[in-house]
Amino acid sequence: MQKLVERRSLSDLVAAGIKQHIVDNRLKPGDRLPTENALADQFGVSRVSVREATKALGFLGILESAPRRGLTVGNVNMTRVTEYLGFHLAINDFPAAQLLESRIIVETGGLPHVMRRMVADPEIYGDLNRLAGEFRQAHDLQTWIELDIAFHRALLESSGLEPLVAFNDLLQVFFIRFRESVKSAQWKRGIESHQRIIDHLRDQKLEEACDELRRHIESHKGQL
Image (cartoon, rainbow, N blue to C red; front, side, top):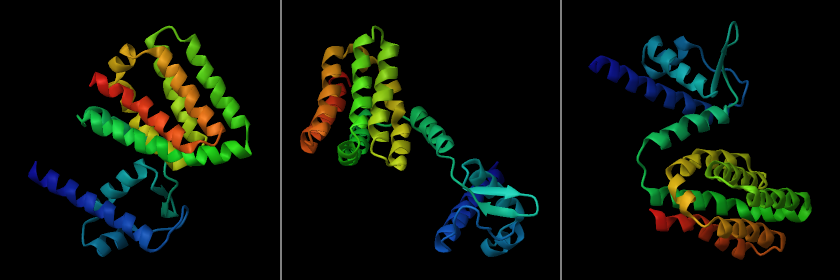
């Protein structure tokens, strides 16, 4: 068992070294990496450790392997990354207050970009407004949660910042951990809050939009 733990730790170090090699050499998707033998020599490890490391990186899309082409830098599969890390968040007992604050930071950080894009493209407000209106048709908890996830994801997508959307996806565990607080919250107040957020953005009132979003998320604190 001890040897297995050590080997896994070694493969983690090799994986970190490969990622650093990619960064240091400014490699891009499609660029070739050294062979397994060369990497083993570079890091002073066996090919087994290199292979374990490359398999782990391949799972996330960081590396790709093809016959006669060898190892290349891949396009990271953000969906797989967020699913994997989201599961990690779900099974670990992170303090609820930290989840709340993390979600506030991610979502309010996207609002300036949403506001700027909304000015250039009025359809963004129209799409968000339609989503906000759908809450009035929700009559059960599951529908409410699905609409809430869709609204907040659409809000971040409207920022045009894809990495930010990926970070938000990691926090979807929020809707699992806070299911009961969503259930006991006043739905009407939530509907009005969603509407005020996008109306403030439409009217270019960024500070008011951020304050409203923070209050909206912090409304769950009373249920902790």
